[in-house]
Image (cartoon, rainbow, N blue to C red; front, top):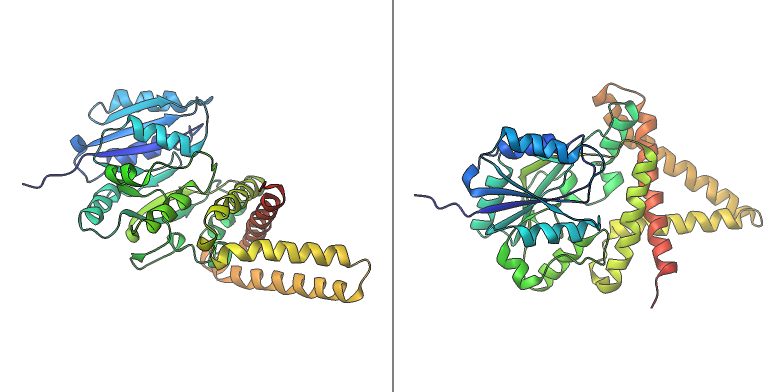
Length: 332
């Protein structure tokens, strides 16, 4: 008889009315034995109908254990830590309130852990539009495009292998006892920082494309820019502690933004700077346009040739600017 380890699915949550029902329904349909599962949601005192949606689901599905813990701070790493502390499972599976896991998500994650493939195992995001519009679809495509996310393999990988980081992740509880919980001083990039600590301690991070979830992208460009500004800002704060973890995809946006800013400032006084600024801008736009053509053809929507470059530009410039701002405002 197979002895399945108990699993706690921990979810930080704030105002996820639109998707929390989808997440819970997907967890209810997991192929893993339901009596070995529990769901712990750390809610940041949602002001929409998120808690009502959770309560309605609990009433209709009492055979799935769901606990809601209060988390007034509304800080993601703190919320995850709070949920972990309130959980009881031998295995911790982290999800988010806007990420819908495949039916075999927990089963494959636990299997990979039991097979010793990694100390943290995770899968890929199948990025879905946050809004049913041509721009929403463009943002979703950009969120899984190599030109937008570089070598972030969890966005598009097709082969299982060891990696630097995975989204969310599945871990033995004992790993947290050995490595520690997520760093609550980092308001973003806390998962990457934890994976650096894990790898520095001799652990492995394993990406398995058989583990996948639908991730809902931001619905519009301002929301996307805010998201990537936050990523860039907190990436530098994390890199101050672990400079050796810097990857080329992370260095390019701030270098590009700094270079463009320098050319703009120099252009009124230096003809060569104006020429170079024009040349770089045209080349950049042509590359983005060329990269969007296959997606526009597959999606049968030529508007994607406008939307995808706009989304990728928002990602590049917001990430790079956030990183640079973090450098200049960092103390010590």
